Structures are given as structure tokens and as C-alpha cells.
Length: 67
Image (cartoon, rainbow, N blue to C red; front, side, top):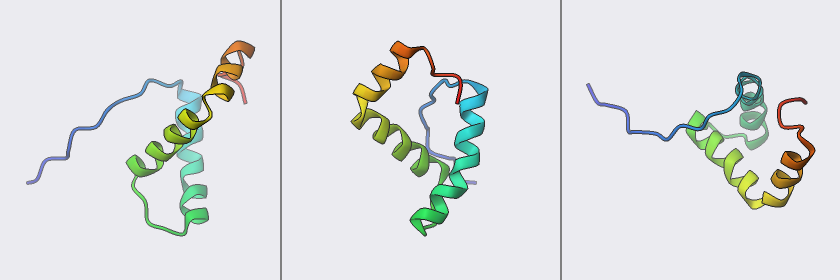
């Protein structure tokens, strides 16, 4: 049996993890592609990294856990 390749782990709140899971279907439908969880999560993090100023503003506001 083939082993899965190793993956990195990010720590997020249970609420954020649930939101990512819920939105994954939206991403697949919008992209009209078959995507893995890793591909979707990579894209979400990469977009966040491109908008680091917005990430910093969110952290300054202290609103990272409520949406």
C-alpha cells in the first residue's frame, strides 16, 4: 500500500476549520475543477500571504475568531 506524502500542518480554531470545510465545495464549484483538500488549502493560504496587509489589519482589530 502506498503511503501518503507528508503534509505540513497549520493550527486554526475549530470555527475556522469548519468554515474552510464548508467553503471547499464553493471553491470546487467556482473553479469547475476536481481539487484536493491540499490544493484548496494551499490556495487559501497563498491568497492570504498575498494580502498580508489585510491579515495584519484583521489581527490589529482582534477579529480573527468571529465572522
